[in-house]
Image (cartoon, helix red, strand yellow):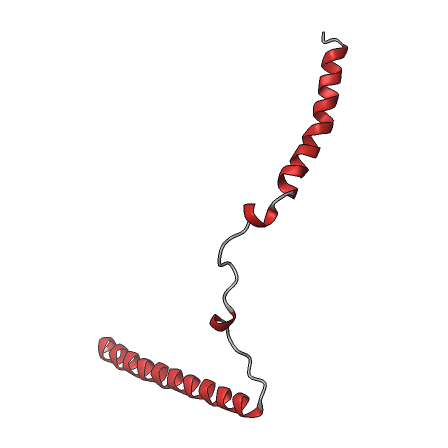
Length: 89
């Protein structure tokens, strides 16, 4: 079949392929595999309140938002029940 030259070639290929693979994927990683603007800018993220006044104002804002959603939901449920009662008669 193949002579000793083929065996030397296969051995060299078996040794060099993983080395070349690691070299290709191991060098210049920042430019090759980076996604621009992947992480949000610090001013575009949520700011965690640490001061007592900030925490109180944030809790008040969340409470208002929850109550507004609850009122809207109850209003929609009230309209939905009225329609269902009329349609069922």
